[in-house]
Structure formats: C-alpha cells, structure tokens
Image 1 (cartoon, rainbow, N blue to C red):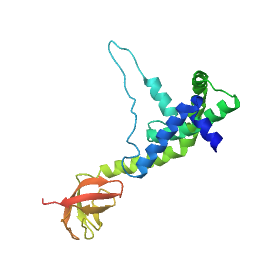
Image 2: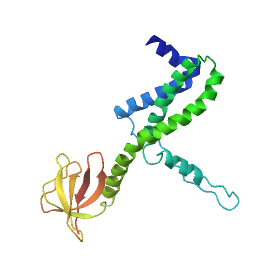
Image 3: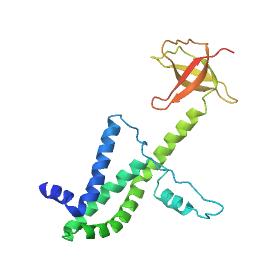
Image 4: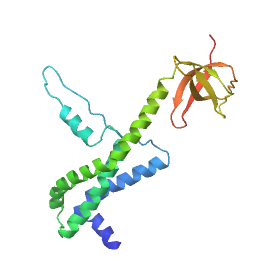
Length: 207
C-alpha cells in the first residue's frame, strides 16, 4: 500500500493523481447534495460564418463518438481519469520512469487509450441518461396545462390529477404550495415539473 501511495504521488504520476483526487472530491460533494451531477458540463456547438469560414463540426463528431454530450461531463471524466491513473502508475512503474517530462510524453497515448476505455465503459449509461432526459422533457411539456384533481393534494401529500387529451387521459402526481389544499374535482393549472420526485406543482385555476 505504501508503494502504491509513493508511486501515485511521485512526479511522473502527479497529474493523473491530482485529476483522480479532483474526481473523488467532486463526487463526495455531489453525494452531500451541494451540487448536481451535471453542474460541470460542456456544450460544443458553434460554427463561424462569413469571414471566419471555420467549423468545429468535426469536434462535435469526436465528442459524440466518445459519448460526450449524451451524458453528464463528469460521468465521462470519471471513467476517463480512473483508467488513466491506473495505466499511468503501472506504465511508469514497469518502465522505471522517474522523469516528469517523459511522463508527459507517455500521458498522450495513455489518454487516448483511456478515452476508448471510457467510451465503452459509459455506453450503458448513455441509454440511462437518454431515458431520464426524455422523462424530463415529457414532464416539461405539461407545464401550463389545466388538470382536474382525482384525489386531494397538499404540499405534504401528493395527489393525482387528470389532463384530458385527444386519447387516453394523462394522470399526474401533483403537489401544491405551502398552505394550499386542493380537493377531488377541483381544477388546477400545472406550474412546474419536479423531476427529483416526479411530481408536478399545481395551483388553483379559476376560468
């Protein structure tokens, strides 16, 4: 264990170790609820026109290939940095490398290998986050619609409300603001979707 610690903090591995510590601290902060999983994110989608004639669409394709933009940035970075750290430690150990400059050169192929590992390791999460995003988008589409309470609802206890559609009615789990009580048969308007608890905030609607 001491040998691993000494190797991790040695000059050739100091950059991957620092990144690993950053990732660990980030997830601890997320678990404590101080920030969201997607607090750090990237959005590359730009094209210059007229005089610039520069396009970064190739970069968008590269990012998409590695699943960036399809799941939170730090999820991908976690799957990138962990193998990068492990490969860096093992590579410098077996090469008996003590040179920081040589480790920077070795870090380039290590980063490329780790990126491919991260791509395949995150593949199952792409569908998961895609499903979560589609659920969120579905929730957002109900905002501003009128619903009818099927059961009583308060700010403490969720109730059910019905939105009439051209097909089957859509049933929503709903809550109200503090001090507002709605009862079965009341009419309300949808104000907000709360994805964490999959409920909708509603208030009384008077036509």
